Length: 161
Image (cartoon, rainbow, N blue to C red):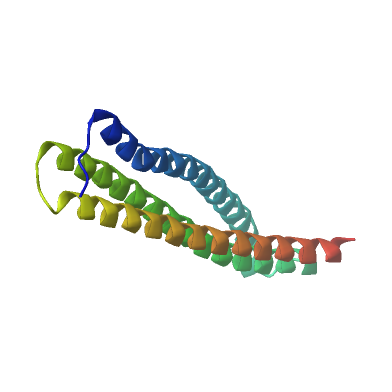
């Protein structure tokens, strides 16, 4: 292994630090999306609650019945989308933890003369990168599901014209 001086140590710890910042930005974006999806589910559920009494009283017209069925379909897809967002947040958060541990392992290798700290730091960094990639896969699936929900809305609005 190579000897670390203070400058080399700071440079070595910089990569995990940058990845922590990058994951922070990813988490901020996905948390905003989480709030939007939750609010949309609440709005759809409120609309559904207004239509349900008419459904049981059999007073809904054809448009209202189509809308109720559309809401049910959309809420199911939004719930799945929410799970994908949850998984994305989970993997991004695990990545941050791996990058923090990687940085700590790098610092430990400077303080304590041990053979395991540097390989451990590399392993933790790589696990963090795998976790980021896994989060990105979940985020991509979530975007695709969002597109499917928009298609439902567009299809429903075609009947209104």
